[in-house]
Length: 576
Image (tube, rainbow, N blue to C red; front, side):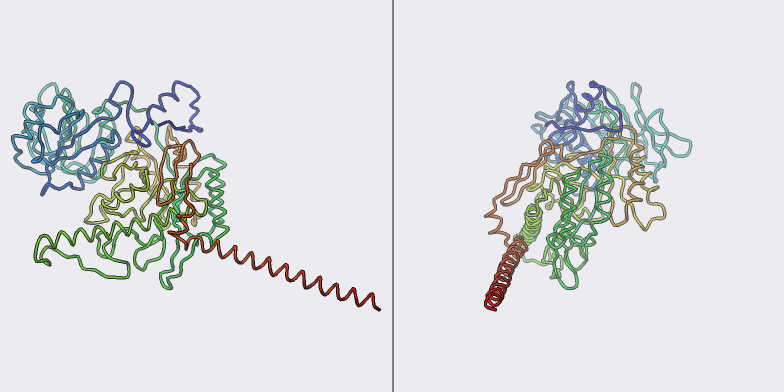
C-alpha cells in the first residue's frame, strides 16, 4: 500500500530522509506498521497467557493493542491449550503470566523448544529454565518512577512490580524507581526479554511499546503522527464556528477528520432532524470534505435510550453497564444460569442476546452509511459514541469499516475499561480494523486550564518514537481555544499531520461501497437498492422535488392568469 505523507512544517526536502519516513509508515495491512527491508515485515506472533479462569483479560487486551503496532498476525492461546504445532511459522513468542500457577509440562516444553525471540511478562517465567535462568524473582515492591537507562526518571502513580535478581551477561533496558533506589524492570539476555510487571496499565504501555522496537528489530524514525478530529457534528450544530475552524485548517494546510452524527433525535418528542433539514450546515460539511476534511461516522443518532443526541451512548447499555440486549424502550434484567432449567436453554438465551445486538448494530451502521452517502458525504472510518462497544460490536463494525478511531473498550463487563494505544495499531480483537487512537484528550470547557492538561499528554506520547499525537475538539467552543490547541500540537518535533484520504480505506454497506485511494473516493452505489431498502432517506428529496414541481405549476398558472387578464384588458382597450 502506498500513500503520501506531508511534512509541510518540518523542512524535509532531502529525498533520502523522505524515503526513510515512507518506510516508517508502510502499513500491514492498513495504515502504519513497523518494518524494514532487513527484518520480518509482518511478524507472526504467538501470545501464550496464564490468567484467572483462562479468559483473555483486560491486561492481555492491552498487550494485543501494543503488539498490534508491529504486526497484524497475532494468535492467543491459554497455557493449558498450547501444543507444539502452535509454533509453526511463529517468529516471535510472548508469554504473559498474569497469575501464579504451575504450568503443564507441554507448555514448558513448547516454550523451551522455541528458537526465536521470546518476551516474557510477569509470573511463572522461572519454569522456562533454559531460556530464563538469568532471572530470579524475589518479591513484589512498589515503584513511583520509571525510566529507560541513562534517561530522565518519569514520576508515575504507584505501581507494583516484581523485584528480580539478574545473572551476569544480562542487560537492563528499563528501571523502576522508589525513592533513591533503582530496580531492573525490563531486561535482556541474548534473544530473551523479561518484563517484571503483572499489570500493563498506567504509563507502562508507552514504555513497553517503545521497547518492542528492539524486540522486533525495527528502528523507526522519530516521527509523530498528528490527528485532529472535530467532534459531534449533528444536524443541529451551528455551521458558523464550524466553517471558521475549517477555513483556518485549510489555510494552514492541516488535514483533519469530522466525526458526523447523521440523525438528531429529540429525546422528549422523538422528532428526528437530518442534514437535509440544515442546508447551510450540509453546505459547510461538503466544503470541509473538499478542503482537507475526511468524514467519520460517529454512530447514527449517538443515543440509546432517552438521552440527547451527542450526549448518550448508542452501542452500549450504560444504565445496566452491558452490551445492548433489548430495544431502547424496554428495560431488561440480565439472566444467569440459575434462571434456566438446562445449560442448553441458557446457551440459547445467550445466542439470542448476541443476535439481537448484532442486528441492532448492523441496522444502525447500514442506515448511517446510506444516509451520509445520500448527501454526497463519504465516511472513511467509524467511531463509536463514547468509544463504548462490545467485542461482538467490533466484529460487526469491521464488516463495514477498515478503519476505527478513538480509544478501545477492552472489557465486555464494563464500558469504563477504556484504553488508548500509544501508536497506530491493528490489534486482533478489533477484527482486522486499523486503529487511529485518541491519545491527548480534548479541550474540556469545565477544566480551569484544559490546554495544559493536553500538553502533559503530548509530552507523555513522545516517550514512543512514533507515538501518536491525537486529540479532538467541539467546534461550538469557538476558534480561539482551537488555535491554542493546534499551537501546542505544532510544538512537537517531527509532527506529521495524518491525512486519512491518503490511505487505502474501505467502507461498505448494503448497496454502497466507498474506497479511498490517493485522496479520491471510488464510490459504488446501487440507487434502486438504496431506495427500496431505505426510502425514508429520500423522502426529503422527493418532498423538495414535489414542492418544486407544485411551485412551477403554480407559477405557470399564475403567469397564465396574468396573461389572460392582460389579454382581456387589451381587448377592452381596443374596443374603446
